[in-house]
Length: 348
Ligand code: SAM
Ligand code: FES
Image (cartoon, rainbow, N blue to C red; front, side):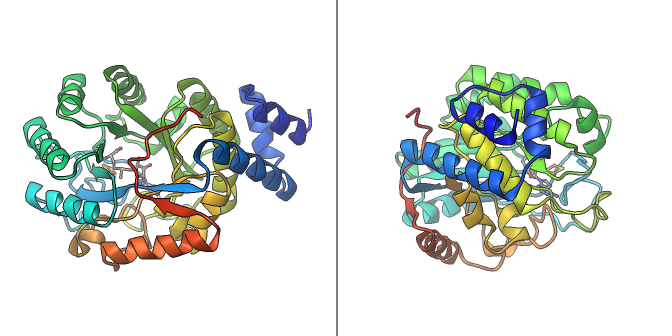
């Protein structure tokens, strides 16, 4: 089967086998990428038109009990200057975001035990009260099922937990032995059972990753059908064990964005900050490959640089309002517009 026949099969909403996904990745060409992107954009336009959804990202803490080898805020990074926002600060970021037109807030942080269920539940309720109709998304890592349930009952709507890689052996190369692939996958299943809109995802070009691993990631997306899928290039951080590894590429990230759009057309797909970091036009390229979500930063300026997952992270010097204006202009230049909506998944 040629690459173009595989693209045909994918666009008629037939999944591919893992071997076929692998071949689609390995045999890619500029022509194949252009064909995939054009079909991905049509599939997305049929559901979402030219609307791009925005999520205001609030980086609530860079304390983390984990030690992921790729991550700049891992606990072993002694050079990382730690901070934690107070609930009042987080609420005021959300209110500022609401004023700017955001209708989804993503509370993201390292796995910081200070954020107990009690504190988070109260915060979620306050955000929901102060920002009517806004969705609250959490991205706080692995917690136990009861905790996820309490946070959901308090009003959290969505949860982002990238699976990082669908291959156990690869997971073990990216994480220390105390972290568990099975547990991460179990968390994703529990979040779904509880009723969250769930986001999975992975890095592109992470150390030791092969096209066979990526093919398994695609199969996982095809089977799990996450509501959101965060994929962005791996970008090295100088204070981590992976400091010397090369970053992932815009080209492969965009190719995979197009494939994922075709695998599951309704999926909410961000053009990530990491993509914008390795290429000034990265986020526009992501949208033109089939993405439909942007996650501008709403964190207070003073902490932006400290939430440094990787080197060179963009948007650490701009006020929230500036970030939003800048993204609006970037989207206008490619014929898209940012909309003020919660941006829930639509099934067509
Ligand atoms: N602690 C939460 C968790 O583990 O899901 C949320 C925060 S974590 C920093 C968010 C995501 O950042 C991770 O899922 C990972 O994919 C991504 N990330 C971390 N280090 C990265 C790097 N060096 N390059 C690109 N993405 C990275
Ligand atoms: Fe915990 Fe990265 S190691 S957020």
